[in-house]
Image (cartoon, rainbow, N blue to C red; front, side):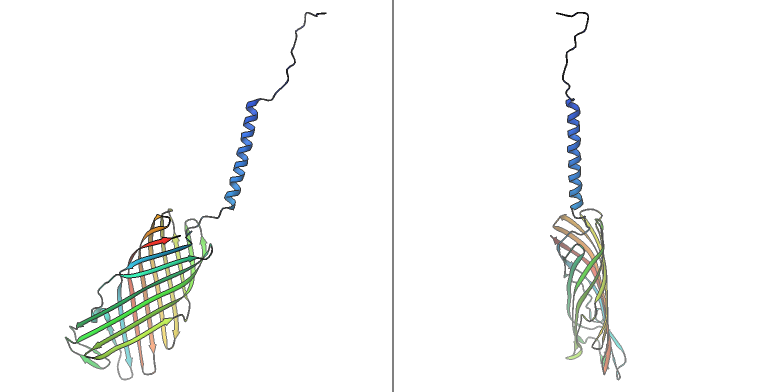
Length: 289
């Protein structure tokens, strides 16, 4: 029997919206990806101003130097010789300067620096002078030799290490050697070989700034004072450098280096003083890994 007067309704099963389900899945996938990225970022090492594990800089060093000797005894008053002014050793020459760095850990490094300055000159002096009680006239033929070498090995600890700044304190040993000989008319005026090494640690500070990934601006200062075998020695070193990394492993560097050594000698019959000041620009290439 067919009933009329009503409205027939078909029963349809309910299915969730396909669009809403896709949005929910995408949100879940995005949340998972962000969580993984966060974990990776948290586990990644923090960026540092100096990420090099090893670097070697070989530079040409063109120094200006001032070298003075002063000697005195009970029989001879104090007399001073200036090698650059009195014996024409002021002429400039380019020398090799080597600097290396090895990173031991995130904050610890070893730094090595070496250079030498060897000079020789023979001339007829244009002024008379007196040394050790003996008088030398104009046109006296004088042969002068002065060799100086410096090497330092320092341990550094970075107490500030950020992506753009590194500030490190250092302590290390130094080796400095000076040889001087001056002869005139087959008479030796000076024939000395003095060496200062170790004795007391050299203390220093180094600052490195990396304003961009390619530029590295640095400065350092180091000082030492010790008394060994009747020699009271003091030295100060300082320098500035700007380096541009052409590639991550290769850079070019310009800088300025300054060094001063003062040594007082107190022997039984003779005492004296040696003052050496060396300063000048550097230009070199850096290889880093």
